[in-house]
Image (cartoon, rainbow, N blue to C red):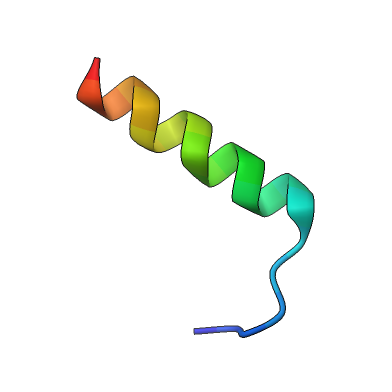
Length: 22
């Protein structure tokens, strides 16, 4: 896993997880 993650990837990942929960 890459230690350096771009803010865009982080925000996208959070949105993706939220959508999965919904």
